Amino acid sequence: MMAIKRKDHTRWRLFLLVTFLLTGLLAFAGTAAAATYTVQPGDTLYLIGQRYGISAWDLQKANNLDSTWIYPGQTLWVPDGGGNTYVVQPGDTLFFIGQRYGVTADQIMAANGLSSDIIYPGQTLRIPNGTRTATASRGTSYSYSSSDLDLLAHLVYGEARGEPYAGQVAVAAVAINRTRDGRFPSTIAGVIYDVDAFTSVNDGQFYLTPDATAYQAAREALRGYDPSGGALYFWNPAEVPADSWVWTRTIITTIGNHVFAR
Image (cartoon, rainbow, N blue to C red; front, side, top):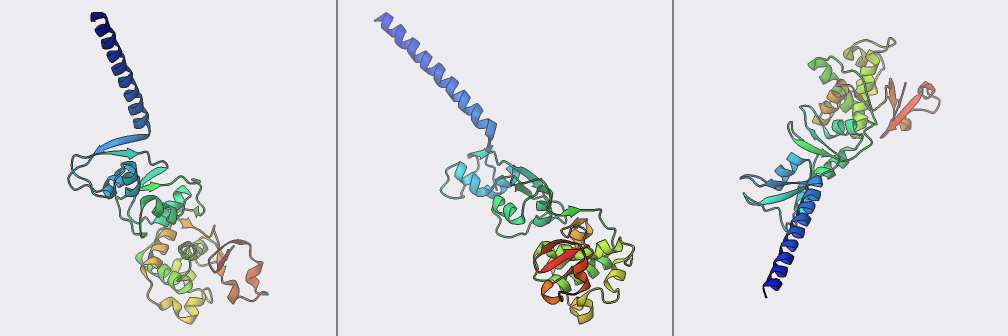
């Protein structure tokens, strides 16, 4: 009987050792791609996700939660989000951030479970894997006054309201690009009020009150982002005759209803 007991005891210790080793290996494998987090008072899945750059939905799925309800002291698995994280800076927009990482604003919204494009300084965003090559060029920022910003916003609203956001930024960029070309006036005001330079100035659309999107597009252009790729001209093909001189310009890109050229 004693020999049998020792054998059973040895088997039991061997079982415990194997279990311990397997548990350690599994834990190591888990921590290589995940982390644990202890819920604090006031936490939500959304706030925790913001810290780790993943969505609330990803947290909920990783922890097999039936709802978003969590409680202080609860331990959550936080999976590796992949991609990158980015802390929102003052003046940022999803379009602006996306340009840095080669992804679209819609992709960032989806990765973070956002229902709108509203973001705030200090917010941490998960950036999905992208090309890391911006689809828009980034030039040098433009030293500007509040008057310059206001004029550009009026131009954007008068010329491009209803166009894709990138197209609105591009319209503002065209005006800025002209200030750096010797064939045009060297100031924003000079470019905009140049004779027959922009249709919206001639037909009065320029004098409408710009919306927040127009102002944001103007700011991004002033910060150096140029979806037009350095264009000096833009036009709507549906409104320009086929024999117009503008078609002799080198076309760079088309955004929405506008052709951009230099």
